[in-house]
Amino acid sequence: METTNTDGLKEQLIAVDPEFRELAREHGRYEQRLSELSALQYPSDEEQLEEVTLKKKKLAVKDQMQAIMLRHQSAGSTAH
Picture (cartoon, rainbow, N blue to C red):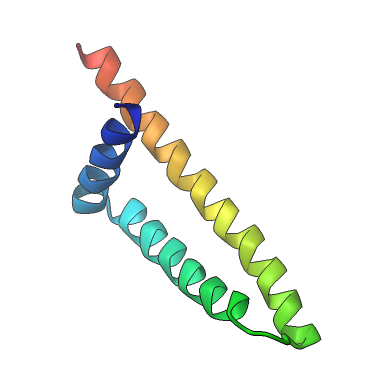
């Protein structure tokens, strides 16, 4: 049930928060590129480095999204 609440909050924030929406897009772009890189049978050194870098960037974006979600949840719980 927690996942459903989290998914709903993400959808709501994507709809109303431009910063969150851009972070979600960025996260999706990183995910897509990581899928492409992981499909390579023999990635070059540059591609391996790109994969590591993208994983770090993706995690940083996810952390930013989580912070926004927590802020929104805190604001919602104090409003009740």
